[in-house]
Image 1 (tube, rainbow, N blue to C red):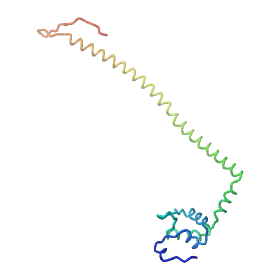
Image 2 (image 1 turned 180 degrees about the horizontal axis):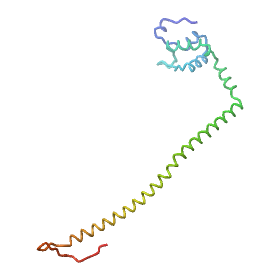
Image 3 (image 1 turned 30 degrees about the vertical axis):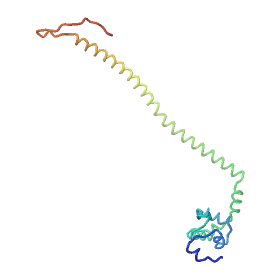
Image 4 (image 1 turned 120 degrees about the horizontal axis):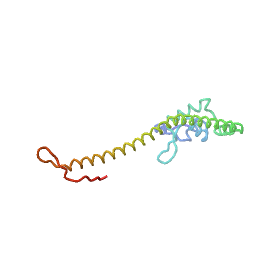
Length: 173
Protein backbone atom coordinates (compact mmCIF):
# COMPACT_ATOMS: atom_id res chain seq x y z
CA UNK A 1 0.00 0.00 0.00
CA UNK A 2 1.21 3.48 -0.88
CA UNK A 3 1.20 6.36 1.49
CA UNK A 4 -1.28 9.13 0.91
CA UNK A 5 -0.19 12.71 1.32
CA UNK A 6 -2.16 15.20 3.44
CA UNK A 7 -3.01 17.07 0.25
CA UNK A 8 -4.74 14.00 -1.21
CA UNK A 9 -6.69 13.41 1.97
CA UNK A 10 -7.90 17.02 2.06
CA UNK A 11 -9.07 16.89 -1.55
CA UNK A 12 -10.58 13.42 -1.13
CA UNK A 13 -9.77 12.72 -4.76
CA UNK A 14 -7.87 9.58 -5.63
CA UNK A 15 -6.21 8.69 -8.89
CA UNK A 16 -6.45 5.24 -10.47
CA UNK A 17 -2.85 4.70 -9.34
CA UNK A 18 -3.90 5.29 -5.72
CA UNK A 19 -6.76 2.80 -6.13
CA UNK A 20 -4.38 0.20 -7.61
CA UNK A 21 -2.04 0.62 -4.65
CA UNK A 22 -4.82 0.54 -2.05
CA UNK A 23 -6.63 -2.50 -3.40
CA UNK A 24 -3.73 -4.29 -5.08
CA UNK A 25 -5.54 -4.67 -8.40
CA UNK A 26 -4.87 -3.58 -11.98
CA UNK A 27 -6.78 -1.15 -14.25
CA UNK A 28 -8.97 -3.82 -15.89
CA UNK A 29 -10.07 -5.03 -12.47
CA UNK A 30 -10.82 -1.42 -11.43
CA UNK A 31 -12.95 -1.03 -14.54
CA UNK A 32 -14.75 -4.30 -13.84
CA UNK A 33 -15.39 -3.27 -10.21
CA UNK A 34 -16.68 0.15 -11.34
CA UNK A 35 -19.11 -1.53 -13.72
CA UNK A 36 -20.18 -4.01 -11.06
CA UNK A 37 -20.72 -1.26 -8.46
CA UNK A 38 -22.19 1.14 -11.06
CA UNK A 39 -19.63 3.86 -10.32
CA UNK A 40 -19.37 6.56 -12.95
CA UNK A 41 -15.89 7.82 -13.66
CA UNK A 42 -15.25 11.46 -12.94
CA UNK A 43 -12.68 13.68 -14.64
CA UNK A 44 -11.00 16.80 -13.29
CA UNK A 45 -10.37 20.02 -15.21
CA UNK A 46 -7.25 18.52 -16.82
CA UNK A 47 -9.24 15.50 -18.04
CA UNK A 48 -7.70 13.03 -15.61
CA UNK A 49 -9.85 10.36 -13.98
CA UNK A 50 -10.30 10.55 -10.22
CA UNK A 51 -12.30 8.79 -7.53
CA UNK A 52 -13.97 10.34 -4.50
CA UNK A 53 -13.70 9.01 -0.95
CA UNK A 54 -17.19 7.52 -1.32
CA UNK A 55 -16.13 5.74 -4.53
CA UNK A 56 -13.08 4.32 -2.75
CA UNK A 57 -15.23 2.96 0.09
CA UNK A 58 -17.61 1.33 -2.39
CA UNK A 59 -14.72 -0.19 -4.34
CA UNK A 60 -13.17 -1.54 -1.13
CA UNK A 61 -16.47 -3.15 -0.10
CA UNK A 62 -17.04 -4.63 -3.52
CA UNK A 63 -13.51 -5.95 -3.84
CA UNK A 64 -13.72 -7.62 -0.39
CA UNK A 65 -17.06 -9.18 -1.17
CA UNK A 66 -16.44 -12.82 -1.99
CA UNK A 67 -18.99 -12.73 -4.82
CA UNK A 68 -17.34 -9.73 -6.41
CA UNK A 69 -13.82 -11.19 -6.65
CA UNK A 70 -13.54 -11.90 -10.31
CA UNK A 71 -11.24 -11.28 -13.19
CA UNK A 72 -12.61 -9.44 -16.22
CA UNK A 73 -11.06 -11.97 -18.59
CA UNK A 74 -12.53 -14.94 -16.72
CA UNK A 75 -15.96 -13.32 -16.90
CA UNK A 76 -15.62 -12.91 -20.66
CA UNK A 77 -14.47 -16.53 -21.00
CA UNK A 78 -17.32 -17.86 -18.87
CA UNK A 79 -19.85 -15.93 -20.97
CA UNK A 80 -18.25 -17.25 -24.15
CA UNK A 81 -18.25 -20.80 -22.79
CA UNK A 82 -21.90 -20.51 -21.75
CA UNK A 83 -22.97 -19.92 -25.35
CA UNK A 84 -23.37 -23.28 -27.03
CA UNK A 85 -25.34 -24.37 -30.08
CA UNK A 86 -27.88 -26.13 -27.87
CA UNK A 87 -28.38 -23.01 -25.74
CA UNK A 88 -28.83 -20.96 -28.91
CA UNK A 89 -31.40 -23.46 -30.22
CA UNK A 90 -33.19 -23.40 -26.88
CA UNK A 91 -33.21 -19.60 -26.94
CA UNK A 92 -34.61 -19.57 -30.48
CA UNK A 93 -37.32 -22.06 -29.51
CA UNK A 94 -38.25 -19.98 -26.48
CA UNK A 95 -38.41 -16.81 -28.57
CA UNK A 96 -40.65 -18.54 -31.14
CA UNK A 97 -42.96 -19.75 -28.37
CA UNK A 98 -43.16 -16.23 -26.95
CA UNK A 99 -43.90 -14.86 -30.43
CA UNK A 100 -46.69 -17.41 -30.99
CA UNK A 101 -48.17 -16.72 -27.57
CA UNK A 102 -48.13 -12.96 -28.09
CA UNK A 103 -49.59 -13.28 -31.58
CA UNK A 104 -52.42 -15.50 -30.42
CA UNK A 105 -53.24 -13.20 -27.49
CA UNK A 106 -53.27 -10.11 -29.70
CA UNK A 107 -55.36 -11.91 -32.32
CA UNK A 108 -57.93 -13.02 -29.76
CA UNK A 109 -58.20 -9.50 -28.29
CA UNK A 110 -58.58 -7.96 -31.75
CA UNK A 111 -61.21 -10.53 -32.76
CA UNK A 112 -63.13 -9.83 -29.57
CA UNK A 113 -63.03 -6.08 -30.20
CA UNK A 114 -63.96 -6.44 -33.88
CA UNK A 115 -66.99 -8.67 -33.15
CA UNK A 116 -68.86 -5.76 -31.62
CA UNK A 117 -67.68 -3.49 -34.43
CA UNK A 118 -69.87 -5.25 -37.04
CA UNK A 119 -73.01 -4.23 -35.18
CA UNK A 120 -71.74 -0.66 -34.89
CA UNK A 121 -71.05 -0.50 -38.64
CA UNK A 122 -74.55 -1.78 -39.45
CA UNK A 123 -76.07 0.81 -37.08
CA UNK A 124 -74.01 3.56 -38.71
CA UNK A 125 -75.22 2.53 -42.17
CA UNK A 126 -78.84 2.55 -40.96
CA UNK A 127 -78.42 5.97 -39.34
CA UNK A 128 -76.77 7.36 -42.47
CA UNK A 129 -79.66 6.24 -44.69
CA UNK A 130 -82.14 7.63 -42.14
CA UNK A 131 -80.25 10.94 -42.18
CA UNK A 132 -80.52 11.08 -45.98
CA UNK A 133 -84.26 10.44 -45.76
CA UNK A 134 -84.69 13.18 -43.15
CA UNK A 135 -82.62 15.59 -45.23
CA UNK A 136 -84.86 14.92 -48.23
CA UNK A 137 -87.99 15.49 -46.08
CA UNK A 138 -86.55 18.76 -44.73
CA UNK A 139 -85.89 19.98 -48.26
CA UNK A 140 -89.45 19.12 -49.28
CA UNK A 141 -90.88 20.88 -46.21
CA UNK A 142 -88.75 23.96 -46.92
CA UNK A 143 -90.12 24.06 -50.46
CA UNK A 144 -93.68 23.73 -49.15
CA UNK A 145 -93.04 26.45 -46.55
CA UNK A 146 -91.69 28.81 -49.22
CA UNK A 147 -94.69 28.11 -51.49
CA UNK A 148 -97.18 28.74 -48.63
CA UNK A 149 -95.50 32.02 -47.64
CA UNK A 150 -95.66 33.16 -51.25
CA UNK A 151 -99.33 32.17 -51.33
CA UNK A 152 -100.09 34.14 -48.14
CA UNK A 153 -98.26 37.19 -49.44
CA UNK A 154 -100.30 37.11 -52.65
CA UNK A 155 -103.48 38.13 -50.77
CA UNK A 156 -104.38 41.79 -50.20
CA UNK A 157 -106.72 42.97 -47.43
CA UNK A 158 -109.90 44.73 -48.60
CA UNK A 159 -112.68 46.37 -46.52
CA UNK A 160 -115.00 44.35 -44.28
CA UNK A 161 -112.28 41.73 -43.44
CA UNK A 162 -112.08 40.31 -46.92
CA UNK A 163 -108.98 39.47 -48.92
CA UNK A 164 -108.36 39.38 -52.66
CA UNK A 165 -105.69 37.53 -54.50
CA UNK A 166 -103.37 39.97 -56.25
CA UNK A 167 -101.14 37.62 -58.22
CA UNK A 168 -102.14 34.70 -60.32
CA UNK A 169 -101.28 31.12 -59.29
CA UNK A 170 -97.78 30.39 -60.48
CA UNK A 171 -96.23 27.07 -59.59
CA UNK A 172 -92.57 27.71 -58.91
CA UNK A 173 -91.70 24.08 -58.40
